[in-house]
Amino acid sequence: MSRTTRSVVITLVVVLVIAALGFVYASPYIMLDRVKRAADARDAQTVSQYVDFPALRASRVSRNRWPRC
Image 1 (tube, rainbow, N blue to C red):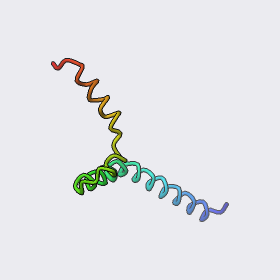
Image 2 (image 1 turned 135 degrees about the vertical axis):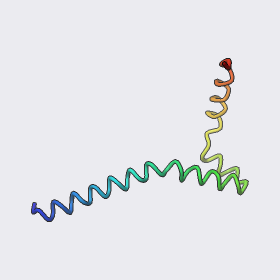
Image 3 (image 1 turned 180 degrees about the vertical axis):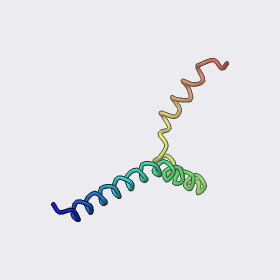
């Protein structure tokens, strides 16, 4: 492998890793924006696609069992 080919491959790998990290960082914000837009539009079906209501309910119930200090 020549020196030029190696530097192109390394550059592509670095760009792909940075793009993947950027996507991992931004994906929760993208999802929250979609939930907010669906809630603003009163689109219950879209909101329910993103929110696991049974798990949310169970989480709230388990939190309410513990006494507050």
